[in-house]
Length: 267
Length: 240
Ligand SMILES: Nc1ncnc2c1ncn2[C@@H]1O[C@H](COP(=O)(O)OP(=O)(O)OP(=O)(O)O)[C@@H](O)[C@H]1O
Ligand SMILES: [Mg+2]
Image (cartoon, rainbow over all chains, first blue to last red; front, side, top):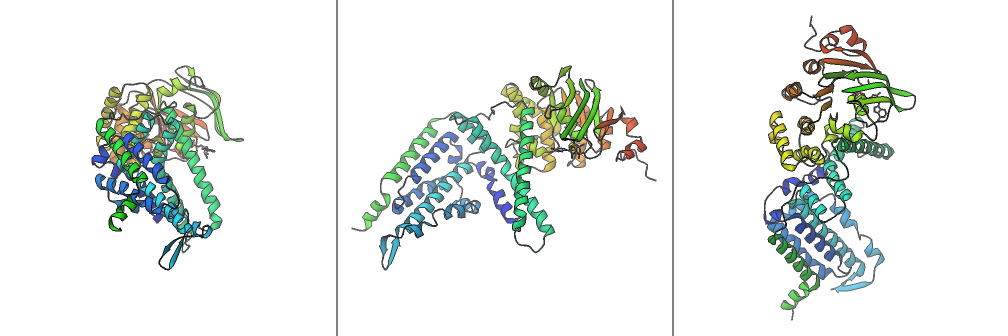
C-alpha cells in the first residue's frame, strides 16, 4: 500500500469510529446533522478580521470530541491529507492586503495575515465538526436522516455510493501506481508524460464500474428511490441536544467570549 | 423457459461478438455455459438481462425481452456478476441483501427473515453487518451470491461464481447451487464445478454454440474441448 492509499483508506474507515458507543453516538442522526450545519454556518459567518471572536468557537467541537470519546488527535491524523488543502486557502491574502492592522510590539501585523489565519481556522473548525458527525454516525443512518429531512433522493444516493466506492477507487489508483512503479524502478512519482493516460484510464474504469453498478441496481428492482434502514424516532433528548447545542453555538458566535474573559484579567 | 432466437450482437461495428445464436433452456434445467476467454459468455448473460441491445429475439417464459417487459423479466432473473465489487453497492452486506426484496415490495419483516435464512444456509451469519469495503474478495463473492438468493428469483445466472473462492467456500457454493430448484445458467472456467452442478453444457466459441449436450458427454470430449482452447476437468483427466 502506498502512502496516499493508506491515508485515503483510513479516511474511508470511519465506520469503526461510528460503531463505538457514547452519548453523542446515541443521538438521533438528524439532530447531529442539523447541529453540525448550524455550527458550520455560524463559524463561516465571522468577519474576516475577527480572529479573536473566532477562536472560542473551537470550544464546541473540542467539547463534543471529549463527550464522544474520540481523540481530537484522531481527527487530525485521519484528515492529514485534506488539512493542507484547507490551510492553503487564504495563503495569498498576506500579499494582497498589506495594510497594518495590529501592532505586536515592534511587529506590525497586516490585515492579510489576520484574514489568512481566520480563514484557515474557519476551515479547520468546520472540518473538525464534519469529521465528528461522520465519526459518530453510521453512513446509512445519516442517509436515512437526510431523506427524512427531504434532501433529494438523488443526492443522498450519490453520497452513499461515494462513501462505498472511495475505497475501491483509491485501490484501483494504487494498483495502477504500483504497476507503474514496478516497471519504472527508481523513479520518484509518476512522470508527467504518463499523467494523461493515467487519468484517462481511471476515468474509463470509473465509467465502466458506474455502468455495471447501475445495471446491478436495476437488476435488483431499483427505480428512483432507495429504502434506507429505518431509524429510531426523534426523542426528547435529541431535541434538547439540538436546541442546546445551537444555543451554545449562538452564544459563542455573538457574545464576545474572548473579550469578556480578557476583561476579567485586564482591568 | 429461456430462449435465444437468432441473436447477434457487436460492441463495436464489424466486430461481432455473438453470431446468430439460438438455444432453448427449459424451466428447472441447470446449464453450464463454457468457452475460452472472450468467447462471449458474459455477453450472453447481459443480453438475456436486457442490458445490451441486440438483433434477433430473446424470450423469457414466452415474453420477448423488450423495453416494456424488462421490469417483469428482470424480476424473474437473479444475476451474480463477475465482479462482486460492482454488485455489492450498499455499505453493509445486510443492506445489500435487503435491497432487492424491499424494492419488490416485500415487507421488512419478511425480508429480514429471508436474509437470515439465506445467510444461515451459506454459513455467512457472521458477515451480516460487515462492511462491503472491508471484507475479502471471496467473502464478497459469497455475499453477492447471498444477495441474489435473498431475491428468490425464478432463474439464477451466475458469471464465474467460484472464482476467488477457497476450496471450502467453493464446495459450499457448489452444494448450494445443487440444492437450488430454480433454472440455473452458470458460466465458469472451473469445469469440475460445471460437471458437479450442471446437467447440460453449452460450449461457446467466437459467439457461436459449437456443442450442446449432457455435461458428462461434452466435458469428457477431450478433442472437442482442446480444439476450443479448453482442457478436460481435472477429475476426468487421467494423469499418465
Ligand atoms: N464493453 C466492451 N466493449 C467492447 N468490447 C467488449 C466489451 N466487453 C467485452 N467485449 C469483447 O467481447 C468479447 C466477449 O466478451 P465477454 O466478456 O462476453 O467474454 P467472456 O466469454 O465472458 O470471457 P471471460 O471468460 O474472460 O469472462 C471479447 O472479445 C471482449 O473483448
Ligand atoms: Mg466473462
